[in-house]
Image (cartoon, rainbow, N blue to C red; front, side, top):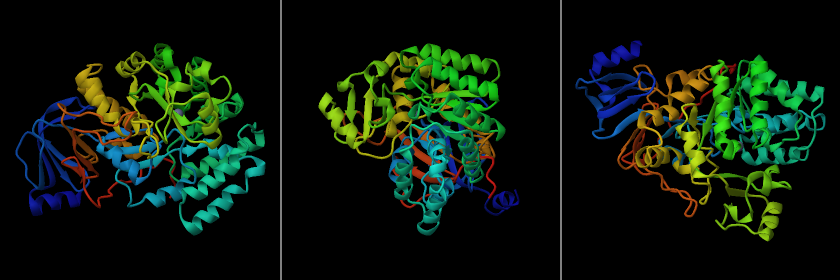
Length: 485
Ligand SMILES: [Zn+2]
């Protein structure tokens, strides 16, 4: 506060001023033409009066919104972040799968991130590491990481060794060891526990129930890709959460519910009505994307997903598969795009007041699923402006305050994000509502969204006139509330 006052006295102005924009703050309901002044990394004033700054942006005819918060990304490299920030995202979190050895990963990102970053504890890897025969891998890998710094190569080697135990059932002793591993990750800054049990559906109901019990005990959240694309799987997750008292966020409800989206929404809505902290998200595309070698393509996949070979698109080349190429690529391993949803199901999910937006954006690849680059501009351009599936303030609410409020009890930094208010973090996205649109496509692959004009991360202009500013890495870590150092 002292710095704040001194600054005003000595200069009588702001570091950065955004003038004449349509300022939308979904928490307070503000929607009007305002000037906004930033000091350091904080919003210092929002006013109809004239203000001056060291630097000034004219936002006439543009919307000034809180920076978009993506609770579901997988691309964490700077290359992936370039597409995220050009899509208006200022905070991108890997909460579905989580990130192993989060301490080293967080250290590796310091000063090198375009946007705010964070991740959950990676239940999938930790449950393997908790098995008696695997327990030596964690200390071994940690020692190697201490020596060489965070390297995804080292992590992958460990995961590959452990994945051999994919089909195991954890014993009571393994489960109690798992608890200590998860606790370590939460204390190192993990935000909740990522439990993508859909990728290891053989895990016992008891083991998964115990993971919810742990989350309840630590006062944190389970982020779940549920066991199967089936209502019973959504019911399992909700039952575990309500019985144990854990918070629950169900990722990509659209690809878990498919044609039953109405029922999926009704289940989550009913739980919310009873007061349970259970939330969900959707991405605005009719295709999913994942690893072809995963259990999702075990025997019987066509009937389960309502797809056939030609509905599968191989990311590396963009080609559609046949029985022969399916076999070949599955044995090699790699990313697939699954065309399996109907536009009406997505519209139903987007129009619901209970869904927030999460991209499920993939690691960078030229032909990666377009959600990796275009999710937020697509909501604003296609679903707000062109199709009127939802209105602008509602869309902004789903991209900002909803994820912020979902996370603020378990990640305190989120209390200052998702809002345009005095004292809030200056994470701001300024876009042209008349032109904003996604450009990435299934045919041509990734491309930067259009109409996202300026993006500010912690007070620093990171996208200016639709270009990424060179050398600005102002993203800060978002830690879970149990971080002890
Ligand atoms: Zn998933």
